[in-house]
Length: 170
Image (cartoon, rainbow, N blue to C red):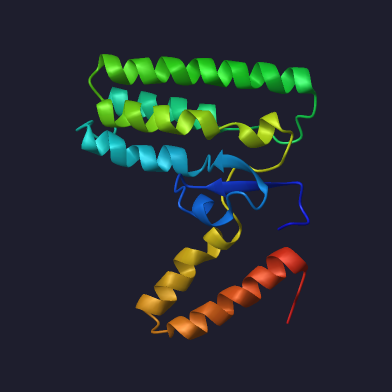
């Protein structure tokens, strides 16, 4: 990691990894934009917002639009305006939640807000979690249902990561 001037870290909101790498490299912290709408379903449930109601549909539709980042946008002025627009919509969404008493959802969105657009504002390609997350569900199912050993699953994951990140193929 010391070979990097800065390091883009994309997480689902868990900041515990920062304790291990803080001070070793400059960290650009980015919230996973895939997780935000999906985790918001839980906060809506905690706020007792019924699934498929007008509020539920509106809130999820808005947050998915806010989290959608177009690829290949490279003009700094366009990026600034896009982020400004998305932040404005996010503020309105937080106010909407507060006005209706959806405190868990408002708090969740408020805490996600500072780190939602780090990658695009730094003109980096990073808006979702690493490629390994894509295979985690399958690996977990194979451990639970297929009875893979944790050691075997770890080895399979290492091979898949080597393929994703280093072009290694068996």
